[in-house]
Amino acid sequence: MDISANYLSSVIFFFTTLLSGLFVVGYPQKVARHGTLLLTFGGSFLFCLTFLHLLPEVYEHMKEYPYLSYCLLLGFFFQFFLDLLSDGIAHGHTHSHKEGATLSRNVFGLFSALFIHAMFDGLLIGGHGHGHGHDHSLLAGMVLHKIPTTFALMTILVEYRYKKGAMIGYLVLFALASPLGCFLPSLLKSMDLVETGWVLYFWALAVGNLLHIATTILAEVSADHRLRMPQIIAYLAGAFLAIMANIH
Image 1 (cartoon, rainbow, N blue to C red):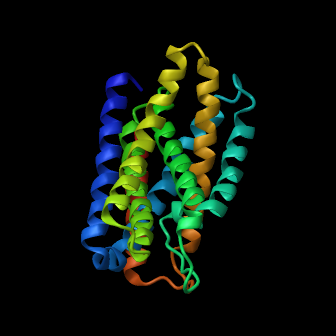
Image 2 (cartoon, rainbow, N blue to C red; image 1 turned 90 degrees about the vertical axis):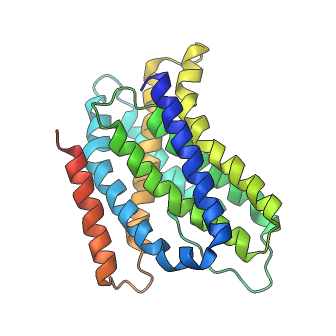
């Protein structure tokens, strides 16, 4: 992906995150009511896109870079560690907390995990210069994932009655994470710190991370393990669009 495409992706990432977070601050009840359907749709889209496009592309480069499969696994299991810090918010879920608990003591771990995960989202785009015309569908999938993740983060900050100034500060920092990930590969290459092969290794880490996210979303989207018709429609719609986006 060239520099101009990285700029465009970064702008889209930044403003998608920013506007999603501001929407939560202004309309928290609407997010709680409709967020699950968006999460289901985005998770289905990402899951299908990962298997139809991203994983085959990783394996396509394994003859030249045999350690990509290990990076793929490392990225997958690294998300377990991030989940311990973020309490699963990277999946777009908010979890109940014990009454009387405070978020302040956990905010560093929570925000750090989400920031790292958001950088992986950007790295998927910025390290995708070897793609075959699927960058737009990949970017769309990441944006669909970014919205419910931002919803979940800001919902928790609203529930714990953070001041609006503090919430906006966290939101802006979080919105900058994915653009940073977008430019990280080109920045490292311009400084002669890494070669193209290392960018592929970082990209494989990000693909493994996304695979964990997508599978967990689909596993956890229904708390009682019963799918209602709107969720089924969201599942099928996400899968259908991912398949159509992958057709040459």
